[in-house]
Length: 274
Image 1 (cartoon, rainbow, N blue to C red):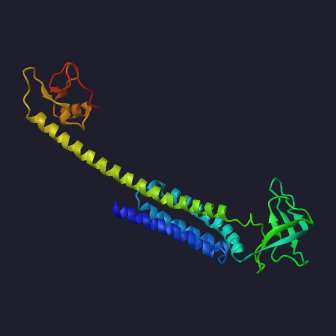
Image 2 (cartoon, rainbow, N blue to C red):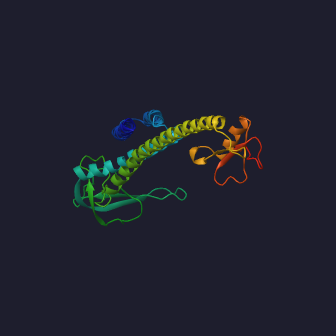
Image 3 (cartoon, helix red, strand yellow):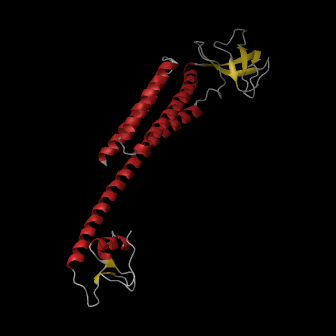
């Protein structure tokens, strides 16, 4: 159990490290490289999860972890821009001097884009401010956080709040780690079930041998029956005991046993022993 817990902790740490690594590489690595890295990540996860013992669902678990990990990276990337803007941005009051919309595309939502100027007539640095709906009109003033380096879009203080994205990324990362814990638990359950099944099979075989020995050595009563208590053989059914008796040339009585097992060469009603 201790080794399994240690391995689960190692795989969980690897999942977190992979999310952090892909988050760092997201801006520098191309899409093809990122896809290849996620594929390699999935293969390594599959191999690691198989060691838990729950082999039949390892591939599905690895795929799920890769998907939620990629979502965690994507949402964290969205939060990164907001956090960067909060850290180095400057809050200013700007005026909307231009407005445009995304072209119609079926039922897809259309973003609104706004060109902003400072009160002195200079443009707000960076790309146009973007919103998911038409919120402002030309000539309207709005408080925004601008990026002095002109890399990020200006956003209102409410838009730049990264709390939702951070919580979302954390939730996806937690789901990935939780899947590792779940698979480790399933593997432990499967191992326990296997051990119990082996122990039960061993006990059943021992009881079968004891029953054979008893049928061979016990003396019959005055009515010709060898009488035994079922409690001595808890792992055997009456039909299995009848089968063993049949192999030894005896039959199991099904009538009038009163809680006991009775065996004889001739019986009133024989217990089936398929």
